[in-house]
Image (cartoon, rainbow, N blue to C red):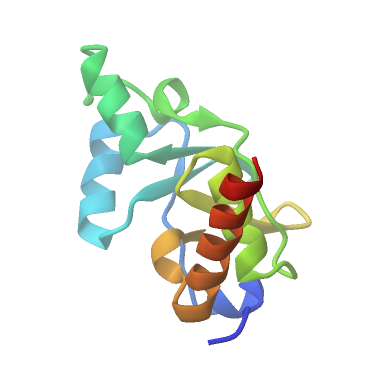
Length: 140
């Protein structure tokens, strides 16, 4: 498998998006139904304003927040890093590795095109990022 372009990876994707006013409980239900690990949180103009992941859900529960009352706006990670669709799988893997997160929204000109996670990558892409990581560990 080659170093694929992100536009190719998300070309048929329908990412889970929800308004910031939706509840954590509703988001978790939708994540479970869709079998995804993240919700892209949007404003009224459907622009990305945050991301809500399983980690955010755990944090909300640990803080004893009521999931039926807590909005995504209160529990999400605001202003997540994004990447443009012309970037490659390796670029996305590097960004996720460097940032310590598992999901990366794909956005072009303010429009949400999709989201990638480590599970979207295969073969040589994963081998290459692991080789780079090991090399940097030896150098550092």
